[in-house]
Image (cartoon, rainbow, N blue to C red; front, side):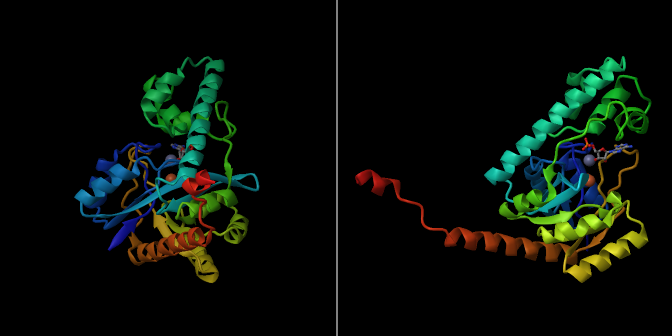
Length: 295
Ligand code: AMP
Ligand code: ZN
Ligand code: FE
Ligand code: FE
């Protein structure tokens, strides 16, 4: 029994629809999958339905772009209430930031005499949470680059001419946002940050888990993060971070997380939801508007 808790669809910068992703997961024999699109939960409903049809367990999630000590890091919220008003309001802000950033990147490309239009990027993205891979795909489609890697190497990577920094939520605020929505907060792919000093402040800020298993973690990195998680009582998660056909070969199936980790994650989500409920019950009762109207 294996799971993959880090997957993207075309609701952000993946290429698969939720239905296609479910079909691939089923083919790889997975019993549970999470959807962790960037800064959105919009794909979760369709993903849940597709998983239901394929008799796979669905774990709702979103990968939030956050920041600590000037470094970008990614926090996954699992099992958040996808109707939570504060969560949805914050996600809408992140999405606006992403859309404005696309316009800014296109403006920079235009200054480099590359006549790409933002509308072409938005047409390819066809979602509220567009990102650099969509700009890259637009560059390839219009013939300005021969593939996505070239687009990133020449224009889109950090400090390349069309790269635009993204304003991000503070990591500690992101953890609180996830918790108030009843979710569990996990640091995604810590190995990609090349700075393990980021982890202790996150733990102090309420981090619940660490994505120890990830396609880009070496066996020694995986061991180091497993060790850290055990020492600090953190949950362990893992996933392929598959974006569909973005990188030529889909990554789904490359990380197979033993199912017992999903059970631990679910128990933690129940604890968070119960704690939120008891906070709500401890609040003074709302004043009755009818009663005050009588006076
Ligand atoms: P953004 O969220 O807009 O900053 O874009 C980040 C996304 O770009 C991540 O999901 C990465 O998977 C993707 N990415 C980063 N570098 C490359 C690359 N060289 N080729 C393709 N995709 C990339
Ligand atoms: Zn992505
Ligand atoms: Fe990520
Ligand atoms: Fe990801």
